[in-house]
Image 1 (tube, helix red, strand yellow):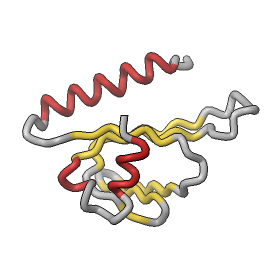
Image 2 (tube, helix red, strand yellow):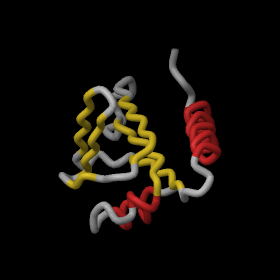
Image 3 (cartoon, helix red, strand yellow):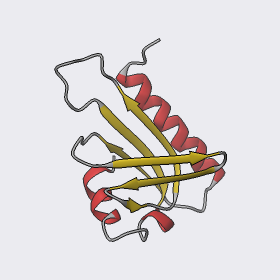
Length: 106
């Protein structure tokens, strides 16, 4: 089953709402990155996960969804990374975090 773009947006909004209820005291941000020029690395084992963008490790990522849709051969930007982050930790992770927020926050 293929999700529509609208369904995927709604699901992300629902997840944000769920996390805001769970962490009402925290400032959460949503980033949607559709840039194939950035290098991503995801490493996971059991409950530990590390996400790096351009070889920089980012903290405070509460939720991430990675979608790669290769069904449209004319679209070179088939990778989409959606993040919900805790601003308190993500913003100070690296020097580049604020530029990512400025460019990709929705």
